[in-house]
Length: 426
Ligand code: PMP
Image (cartoon, rainbow, N blue to C red; front, side, top):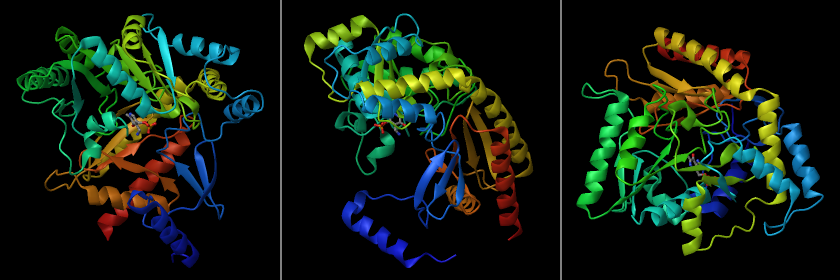
């Protein structure tokens, strides 16, 4: 398959204009044209099964979301300092999805803004500066949030106010829960030795960038107790696990039976319309607003509210939380069966439609990023889009739109089976 010269020219032009910030997927990038449900189409009409885009979570270009955006854009699109029924209806519906204590919401435009605000709220609430995050976490792109996103730091050293901990795992005879809590105790002591108090533990409740760690459900309980005993807050970053992704509930923290002090949201919130949000207890927001102002020109505008409302409605009407649970369980089981047949698959884990699959070198059990990359490119050749995550880039991040079907899952599993067999035969 040759690379058409006009595509090569466009790639070169793009690189010339975007410079070092230009990132494209695949050795031969896709000229994408449209999408519907769990499928995407390139300009030649070639169809791809989307197994990793979690932003169009209720399905690409869902007609009800598209219609809500278009209708509201034709009626009123303005900042947030007027009364507006569309915005009121949305915030009421959104807050009805949270534990009673978490009864205030600030709407933003991105997950990064949400986490930035959450960090500032936590610092003012606690009077402390320090944050604990997992070692391969990503929480966003502002100056402050980049400091708690070790996966973004590259050559830069983490700031002294940040202490990183390993992703959750059972270790040294300790359960996942006990070990994770112990690592937080150590991190608190480490911050203290630097003269820094704990503002918050911030965690993506399914540990997306670290490589997807979901089980056992409930393991975050001890960790949140440790944080609260130390006077810190727990910030649940629901940008990835939120809005039904993990099955069984709307939020990842629900699987763990904990109530965070602050919850941040983004990505799937508007199914592609840029939206984010911070939900917290009124007294925490009040303290923050007494000390500093917060204004977000586009956050929670009527078009965003219409989009967000349609997303929540579609999740309910199409039973997407349940679907994520049932299709996800089927998918995970079939991938675990594949693991039994292929020693290169080291582990399969996850919750709902968020599954991590580790590639290893069978002889050494070391993470095999080269195999992950091979699989990703071969899957693309077979019409399937997927990406990698984790500390070593050796974990397939399986995270399709929630309208994904069991047949879609079987197509993915069957294709991966063929690819792994072919590689061994080669
Ligand atoms: N938190 C998590 C867990 C994320 O995955 C991301 C985006 N990848 C963000 C925050 C930042 O969201 P945004 O790109 O909308 O700023």
